[in-house]
Image 1 (tube, one colour):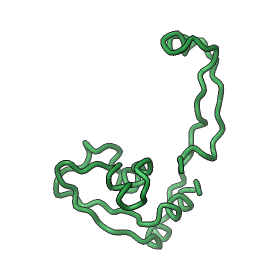
Image 2 (cartoon, one colour):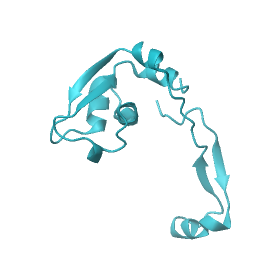
Image 3 (cartoon, helix red, strand yellow):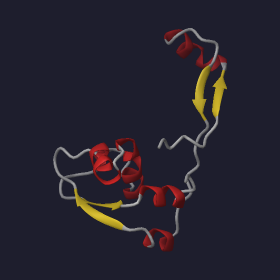
Image 4 (spheres, helix red, strand yellow):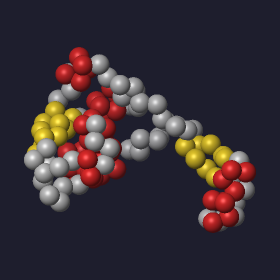
Length: 113
């Protein structure tokens, strides 16, 4: 379940990205995904989601938590986004993270499901 499933692929032949094309495979276009626009749920919508807490410890990784709770490590970004901590470097030992339990429900709440 990729977060980009519902987004168009775009061919970018801009001269600005010529250096990237030359470094990669010398193709004429770069294939990029349309930028997703995430909907920010209201307090009520967030309150209706089932969540649990996790106390961040040394060695924790978002992808491991996503695999544990969702069975899919590629959904790590849900935990990062939900907690407003875009990278693991933003979480410190002892921090309490809130983890939405139903990945499909949070994707629907974000307008991606």
